[in-house]
Image (tube, rainbow, N blue to C red; front, side, top):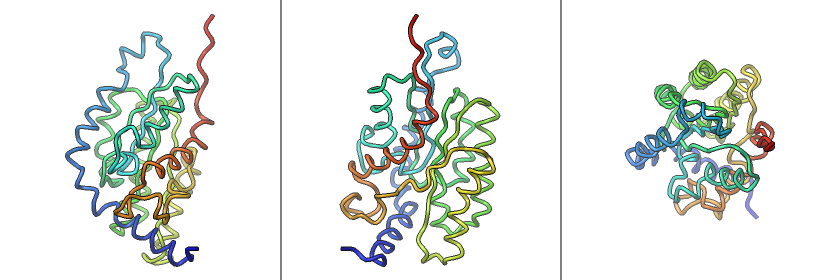
Length: 240
């Protein structure tokens, strides 16, 4: 059985390496973002009464599904579940490996050229890696939420919580964790308490690098997201 110290050590390795290797896929994920933008329903398409709504997953390597096939990342797994339930939503994966909250703040306007009905914000872990002041992370995430609401006043927003181990300092770790709790409360958005719950620190659920979730780990992330997401989705309207 793993001790608490071992679990914290693995968690530290997983979280602190998210930034270090994220840039390897930076160029590759630029194509992903272009695809995300072009595959989301345009404003004109949305006026055709198709009934299809858009869920935008906006995050880093966890959302992008680093090291896996696109259909193994948790946003794709969420789409599979949505389709199985015949819900009127299309998922767009706008995850970029290595993304920080400041980087997300810079690129969100581009993605918001298309309408969004549900916005899942998964950023901040890479801020922790750099030891960025949690107040700055808070401001960046808050600004992203404000931009989403400005363009899509009726959008439902979900914030994915993140934690870092205490080897950054107990005070810093606590302040970092509270960024997500405080932001969810003050901005009145739904909160996933800890996206990596059940995966962080588990060797069997992470790739050989010990950093990123395996396909099985991504399934757990999908469940963690679904526990919150399902409560904000609207059922398909019954046909007359």
